[in-house]
Each structure stands twice: as C-alpha cells, then as structure tokens.
Image (cartoon, rainbow, N blue to C red; front, side, top):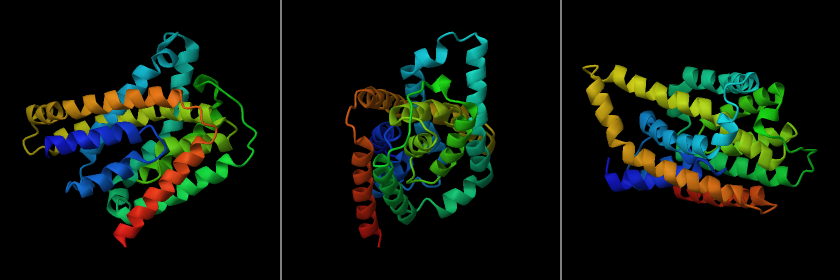
Length: 265
C-alpha cells in the first residue's frame, strides 16, 4: 500500500474511532476512494485500531492504573472482560460472514443514517440518567452495554456511538456512557489486534516470525499516527461542552450517509 494513503487512513481512523461516526465505515469508504479496498484486510484495520486503543489507555491511565493492585480494581477489570465476551464471541464466530456481507458502501450508508437518526431521537428523550465513573457502573449494565457493542462489528454503526446509546438506555448520562464505552472497548480492541497478528503469522506461507515482524514494523508509522490523532481527539472530546452534541453528530451521519447512498446508487 502507498505510504501516503496509509497515513491518510491512519489520520481518519484516529479521529473517527473516538467520535460516534464509525471509523470502519469511514476508513472503508475513503479507502475505496483512494483505490485501496481494504475490506479483506482485517489485519490492517486491527493494526489501526491498536494505535487508538493505546491512546485510550494512555489518556485514561489514572482511571485504569490508580490503585492497580487492589481487589476493587481487579473486580473492575473482570467485569470489563465479562462485558466484552458478547462482542468477542460474535466477532470470532461471524468475522468472515460480516466481512463478506456487511462491508459494502450501501450497508455503511444505511447504518450511518439509521444510527444518526437514533442519536437525534435519543437526545430529545428525557432519559432519567446519572453521572457514574466507569468503575461505578453495575455489572448488569456493563453486560447490556457490551451486548449493544456487538452491533459495532458492522461498519457504519460506531462502537462509541452504540455504547453511548446503550449506556443512556441503561440510565447513564451521555458523558458517562461515552467515557465508559471507550474503556469497555479496550479488551476487545487489544484482543482483536493480537488475534490478527497471530493469525497473520499462522497464515504466512513459511510461518516466518521474521516476515510477520517486518509487516508490523512497516505499520509502526500508521500506529503512531493513529495514536497521536486519537489522543488529540480524546483531548478535544473531553472539552466538548455542546449540550446537543449527539444531534450534531447525528446530522453529520445523516449527511454522509445520504452522500454515500447517492454516489452508490
């Protein structure tokens, strides 16, 4: 792949992974515009996810590593793993099926529009919500949000978007749900990246760890770019004070979805 095109996709991934607009949808569609159809390159997509995942870990380091060797912190991590099981199982069992049938522009456009509409509706419903720190979210609600996260396997949905909606339906405020969604995504994003690296090694013709390592090294600039852009995006999101920010992103999703529909049809 062309280095400039890869870095372009890295920047797009870094921004859109953390905003509720669907990173995979944007990367797939823009990749095709750049004559890079990466729908069959799940290892590439997972490698880009690695950069933004590292950005999330560094940004929320206090939440994750404060009082690290305590029973409460261990319990919190176990809860996160349990809540991540639904998306891990669905992703593992139906990875090829999803890639084959749901990576097209039409699916991406429809889901951008549908979820964007849900954003606008949800923000205008008076949910009874509370502000909770990620560690304060009850296990039952974690699992329900984790089940909602499975929809993000289909490009166009948005993991941060669907976990925010699921969190609001479970009684969390928008900001609490968004923040929890970032942290909930760590296990599955790290796990999928590691899985794709191992899978790449196994599928290498000569099972050469050297060949696989070289491929990873070639992606280091892309990982670094997604990390830097992702960290900056988190910094901006934390200071985003618009009351109707879900509606703003909903309108954006509707606009982009309609444009993709027009050019696809």
